[in-house]
Image 1 (cartoon, rainbow, N blue to C red):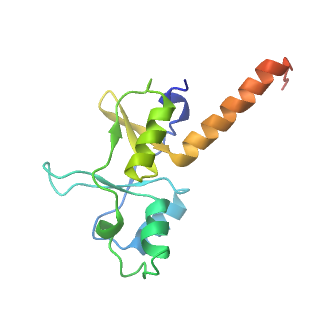
Image 2: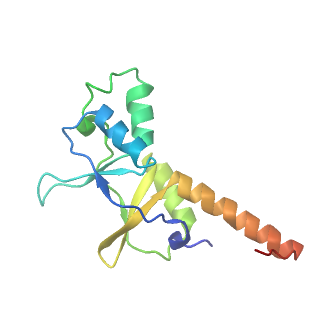
Length: 144
């Protein structure tokens, strides 16, 4: 079992308004190393949304749409799926993302934004786990 906390990347929370264009969201994604963008809710009864590079690729680029004419509200994933348990097995997060067709989950700790778990985070953590396992089995020592 790999706990979710091992793979969560702590990012500065960046936002994009639902009325912004996909082109504006794309610029923000590139400027912030493809960290997902939170889409604020309209009011307390509304749900948060999220825009990822996956949304741009699958709902704009793949469909041949003009990113300057597509609104974030048309391509965002909503509602934002939030995880509150940092000890949760990383496999669960991966399954949830696959079932929902999304590329990121928001992670809260004690009610505060902690970071995002993305498909990239999961792959990197599994890669690191394989490397650690190989070192443990080989008995090799590493030095700095």
